[in-house]
Length: 132
Image (cartoon, rainbow, N blue to C red):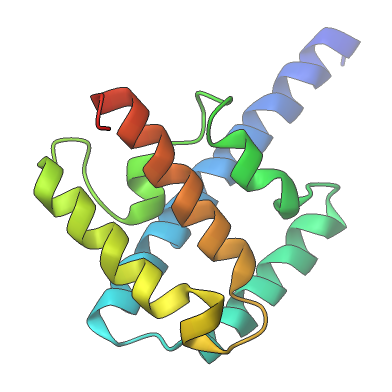
């Protein structure tokens, strides 16, 4: 296998993993809002995800920064919403997630990374839609 072909295979694999991770994060967002997933459960899941992604050399701590830069990262999926969601629906989802995830509210260590992802996703949508 040539170096270029190997590089393309690796790139496609990383993109597929990023897609799957975004879907999983979106499902977590939905479950948090519905009360199915608690902050403690989220912290455990995030720890497992960080370890798994770290094992292949992906630093999830960089994920919030990627929200504003990488076209692969879809902020709507992180919030567990469709791109067609109306402004009010996006704002409500953000408020609901912040209420559950905010470090001062949840009191659960380990939810900070997901809180940063949600905040970064919302900020990207806010800029995209021209909200003040």
